[in-house]
Length: 147
Image (tube, rainbow, N blue to C red; front, side, top):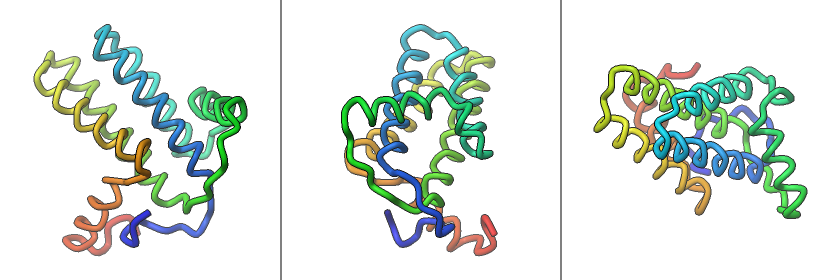
């Protein structure tokens, strides 16, 4: 986690966040392969549930916890602020993809989904958060951001 990440001094399991990123990426790829916009709506609603503290109703959260238990993945605690920011960016990406889908902007969908999947891959493989870098830049330009 970068020193530029927003800190809220509440710890969550970073392993669960990374496993969740795997599931979200899977659903985005399924959307790209099938053009079924319901995948994007599902992810968007799931992001909202997790952003607003309704994790117990999140299917992706449930699948991530189950996967962690089955695979005996070790917990890595991290500050929740960075993961909350990443979920906010993820929700933004899903909204953008939904809009692009309804306006039939196929090239834009390809680039937006590609950018999302690259960010997601970096989080999954290296625990590297692009959102924290964007946050740092935005805070330099607009210091009152997210306060």
